[in-house]
Image (cartoon, rainbow, N blue to C red; front, side, top):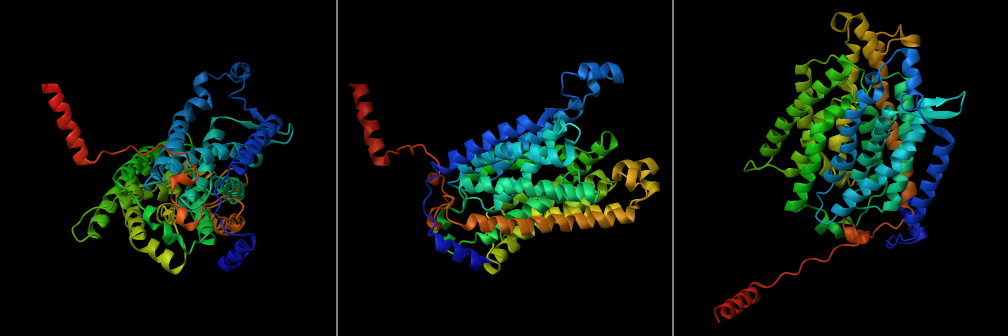
Length: 478
């Protein structure tokens, strides 16, 4: 597959021209105009955000506090910060790629959320009687979730692609996400409030497949820039802390009101704390002098939140959450130590941010953990109504047993992986053609390819600085 892609690229010429003065504005303008037209045709306010809410309150005997906005908006704020600040700053660890990490993250999230509102609307909120999509605050949360999968994929190809290529990745990523989410959540009727399957597993393998197809055999020419400095790691740690603090909101944002949302936040909170300690322990053990590696602290400490994405809403118990965080912290750190170098050396997989260890594997394992917990659910633990509310055993699913639910949960993980790997390979092949303005191998991981950079501050040699100081001192004495 990789050789076929390389032959196709050579046919069209080398990938060296990073001039996107025509292609990037064209994509942005065409896309935004298309969104204006499509929103005008399809998108409308739902009944809780429409001005007719006043009339609905009277007829349904409701109050403003029962409006969905007051339940969901605090969680939406947290998720929104994670998408635009957390993910963006987490990727600023490269010494010369911070503008691109934050700036391109900003671009593709704003680009993707508009398409997500449409794609998810067509699948979940389309009213066939009116031909319209009705959106509310929960639609905004789900749109951010949808963008998260593409931002995860961005981590695997960070520093090696152009902004135009990232727009293509997002366009197809949002589309694939909407389809696989519909299959997993609607057709298979899986429960995945925190998106371990539909977001992290899919996004991780989607990015890895793209990175594998876009393999650069001469990437070592940019090795001097493929690393961090003191201040870049500090900025990346800001992203880590934002993500770590708000992850309970991320997992619980669309969980069931009441005990479901409450339980999801608690389980995520506990698992995150546990993963920090095991990450620190294994990171220290891996060095002869017991020193910590900032790569591990920035990433593996978040793996507990990913792994709890599915099971957090279930009765996994607090000590169960601790066990998940304990184990996944070890697995993720081990991945950064040994698996990532192995994948690059043996499988030709260049994963810049290590999303295999933070999203793909924890998301996959989180999905299977959810399947096990669902399969072992019982009425004595959940209560009869608790089982119905937690797993949605209503309507045509009212006779589904917990064991059957567990099987469908496991099937959902396989669907997410399949969509990520196959979809990513196809998108990677599309991006392989040298028409997108991506940088040459010796020009990767450098903001200068796509950004106007401020001039470096001139430094005065120490001897000259000393002479100037003595001259000024003598003038003052005189």
